[in-house]
Image 1 (cartoon, rainbow, N blue to C red):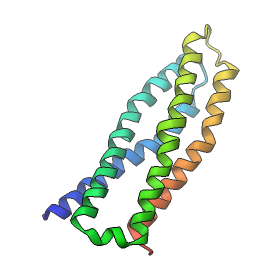
Image 2: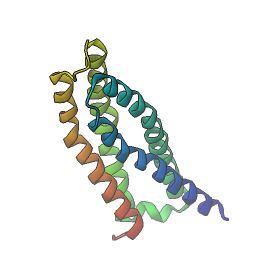
Image 3: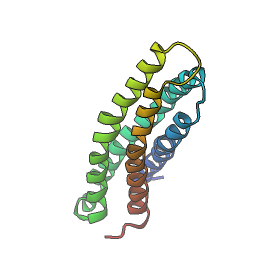
Image 4: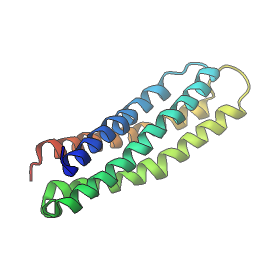
Length: 150
């Protein structure tokens, strides 16, 4: 396998690991019905988030390496658009969402009892539009990478 083919392979593995984790995280966070389950979900989410972070960084690095190895990519619309979408989504993924999850963790850690506090549920619901943005961006990125439409 060529160097370029090897980098493409790593890029695809990073996509499966990182993007798959990104789709799993809201499912994990949505289902707890007790405070103990919420604590477990937050802990599990934190562990799954590692796959999303490592995969995301690997995607960016391998994508840029592919561009360096094939400089024509920097002249294609789908490649440039993919990088712009990726960077734009990082504001949500690295900036907004972790703050909300941290707030949820603080709420549930301070809570006594097995019911889930309304404040926890409120913050969890606030994550929904950001998850939608993230998932929509992922689907668009996969379409761009797969079909290279422009």
